[in-house]
Amino acid sequence: MTATAIKPITLEEFLELSETKPASEFIDGQIIQKPMPQGEHSQLQIEICEVVNQIAKPQKIAKAFPELRCVFGGRAIVPDIAVFRRERIPRLASGRIANRFEIYPDWAIEILSPDQRYKQVLGKLLHCAKYGTEIGWLIDAEDENILVVDSDRRVIELKDSDRLPVLSGIDLELTVQQVFGLLSL
View 1 (cartoon, rainbow, N blue to C red):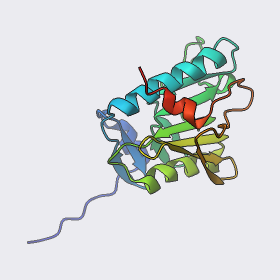
View 2: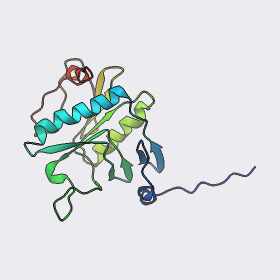
View 3: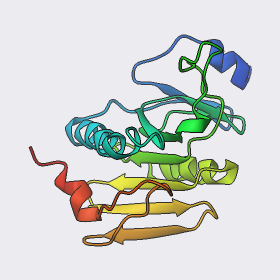
View 4: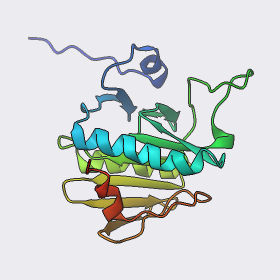
């Protein structure tokens, strides 16, 4: 039996590949497919997007996008929620939103799935912070806590009635309990 060398793929080659469902990410030269979202994950994702957009969009401050590919710092990641300040949203000459976001999000939110590795997901948020993301959340529904990554790449754990930091300029106050309260119908 002979070993065959697998040719490493570049970011540019990855971006030329067909999309997968669920999405695949390009991290440190590897293609990693995200897990299929389940009920709690989907519920949190849609509800948090709606909460952020209800406040930030009418005030023309920012917009939350679910599952948006962001390409920066040699990686192509797909945060569960990527929030961009309005003035940083890539646009075409016509003014319409661009399809490719080759910039870091201002606020990145990841929702840990049961079969995801904590370290890998936290690593994505730390990568975001390294390149300019102001705030990152890692939501762990099983333990009902949220790890917050700030722009200096400090990580803090918040629980219960702890108030969550949000993107500056957005007049939104949320506690960890309130975020997990979004799981109730």
